[in-house]
Length: 135
Image 1 (tube, rainbow, N blue to C red):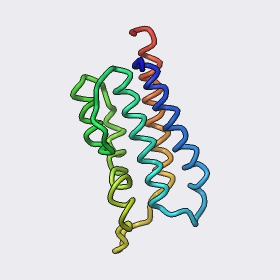
Image 2 (image 1 turned 180 degrees about the horizontal axis):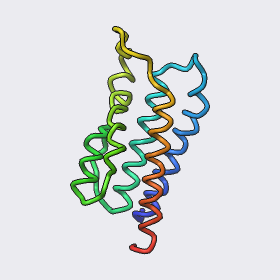
Image 3 (image 1 turned 135 degrees about the vertical axis):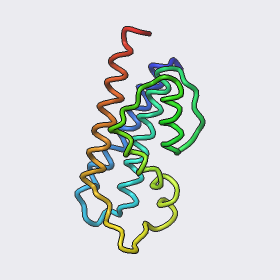
């Protein structure tokens, strides 16, 4: 599949996770683990979309740190203000199968999660738009 088409597919798939997130995020009965999982998945797909757009091969992984490192290792600017998306990483693995820590830890900040997703999508879409003329 051509790089741009693959990137567009990944962004569409990320939008599906965002759709699910938007439906559940205001529901107090929706488990934090589910909210975090869909947020992590959306970010993961957005990072992979930018890597795919630039024809950077990446390993099948849920590791956001590895994907961010791959971006930077390949000269792709990943804004410092998006670094906090790394905090979503455990939702793809640890919290998917284990409970969230409950020893005095604050509940998941759903507004923060939604904002992270919004800002990451904005960055990924900007990368897509800027690459149109350079393909």
